Length: 250
Image (cartoon, rainbow, N blue to C red):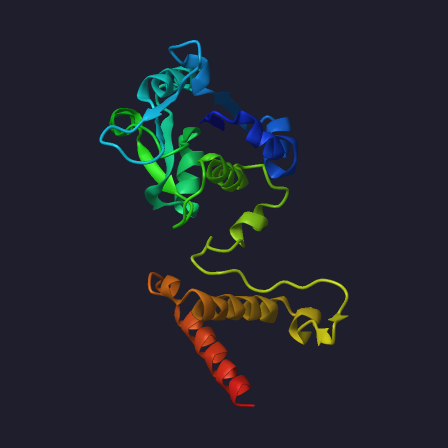
């Protein structure tokens, strides 16, 4: 997997390059990350990459020429067929589907904007897609790009020690994850559910699916609207709702 990042602050990425799953994937030659700083392609001695906005208004805007040269530098290394993504609050919401798309494409270039953003003409000419990690504004695209890189890396075969870790994660089947427990069996007066201790794997799987469905119903009910539940899932969800009502009435 080849990742390119256009940023004026490449040092911000040191945290994911030196620790965690991304660092491990890099060390195992599963991921390659190349940076390109637009300041290196600035056209004046001051390394200017931003200017005032035409039409007036607050803030500065990143200029197109340094960004274009920075992009061409990365495309020479990664390939002209790289998916070019501008990380922006105006973009489509990033999710697991897009994360898998990146892995299948095998090449992506992330553009980290700063200030008031980047010149619209650069976006129209060179950007394939705009992605957002949420409905809020950050001071730049670097943190969002790190989130995307981390998410994408998890789907690269061999990046995680256990393939099931990805398959059972939240959102992988359209649902939130079920609750997890470990030692001690009793903590602050709260015990691990007995069903997880009886060794009946079929019942454990049913319990986990019920909790996953129920947690989604409680916290993100809109996710259920896009899912075609099986008869068994409908039954498990109904049981969860009934158990919840009984608990509330006690």
